[in-house]
Length: 262
Image (tube, rainbow, N blue to C red; front, side, top):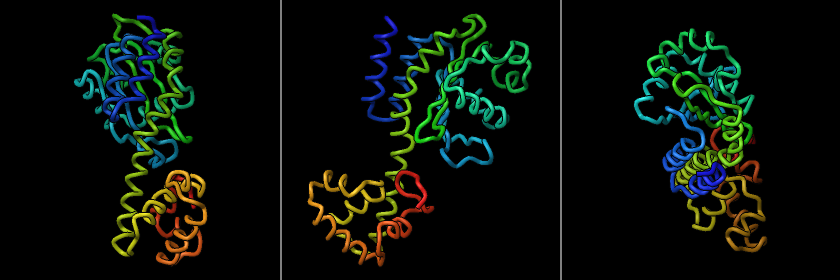
């Protein structure tokens, strides 16, 4: 099948997938057709909670075939500094192929390679950094064995062309949904202490998701003056005088629903 047809099919599949598991499965299945490879992994980061300067924490990972999880798990546990270096390089470049930046001797003599990848006969790696809202969300890695040979510049281009779409989809599943879950928990804590009407609860949820008054009115199909009345009641019940105080009062860690400091 033509790569452009596969590309269109891939975009449709990831945008319409019902859950993140479906996104990952469809993505790697289509990438196998576009850029043949023997192994693949998707490492999801912990977000902005980096463990130190430049360090990257891994929240979860997904591999195909599943037995390759052994290699990635060993890399995460035994060689976190090497993993961080690889992911930082991918983040800076967008997409990279290891054979394009490291000589064979350097790649094959590295301790992490001997421990993690030698048994799988890994010859080259193609990586794409998926970013969103100025943070690294994930790194997608495709691996080829020595029999398959190195990735080409065209492969880098094909993978990089997906970057914008993957950023949107991954952010939605990996970050935005986490924010919604966090906000829902905060709302429940407030309702346990203060009586809130259903409409006040809806408005408070949208405020915590960083929605403007105009966006709230449009989403709830209410007038501005009606919204202001609800806001006055919310402020009174929570003993605050402004939206800023409301966010400070209710949102954990002093950040609003989009991760911005308040």
